[in-house]
Image 1 (cartoon, one colour):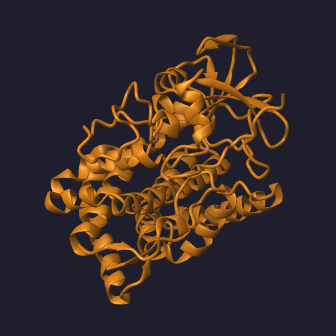
Image 2 (tube, helix red, strand yellow):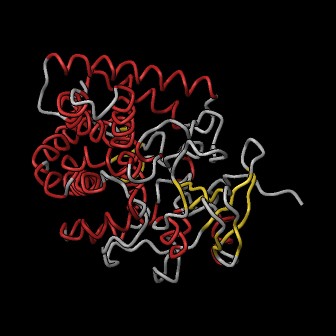
Length: 395
């Protein structure tokens, strides 16, 4: 019997996991699938199992290992960003960035993020309904925030957003994705040269003047680090904002509760992160020795895909898990940011951005609603990071 192809597409409610993987979660918890190039991997779907794997050093994130999974033709797992490394090198490179993404640093940025958000809400209101929330708000707000933090000129946003779409699309050929990565890398390397000559108060300037100059970081490592931060810093946050707004419009009682009590925003954002699970491609690891998961024996060299959307609907962890409930305890138990040593570096900043974005929209546009039915919206089924290509709204 032939193996099912990975990934399966979300069907039915666009906020729900692909049904195939929910079925696996509620059954054996693990199943073998076939990738685009004929290789195989194991999909793991239960919350506890995924957390265990992400904390288990017998499962490697090192994309240079022989046989490491390749999700799509345009994805090169061997690109040596620190998220595709194991400790101690992963920890060494991550530590260079840690001070820029602490809870304290994210909280200190609230006033600036609020100003950016207010400016874009003002623009939305001036345009008048209908408007596309993705292009006018959800994408530019986090793009501008990460640009300022990294020291990337925002006037070049079209370049890095276009490159990101090619790099992150399942549909991109190897040549298209490599070309987009090369173009973005060349741009950021040129920017690093300019920062070396005239450094500013930003992340790239610090990496150039403190790390590269000391021989702690090669230019290639610096550029790939900047690529990762730039892409992750706007793509996942934009997707979560747009999906969160769409989900709230489909749950009017929840939206009304948030309007009545803005103090619910922290829990509401945690629920959005759990409910929509933007990292829909899954996280990948390779077994470095023989190991057993869900009663299934895996041999060294086999790959696992950790399917987060199914885990975030695990009834053993989240009661009434299919329900969207902003009153759910916002303790961050979801896996929206991963878990373990590779947990998302920018999660504190992302939380602040999403909180401010959604709360401000709800307060400033109290009659906001979708301008088209949910089933007609163009969801990003072909992308590694879930979201919407556009979100027409009215008020």
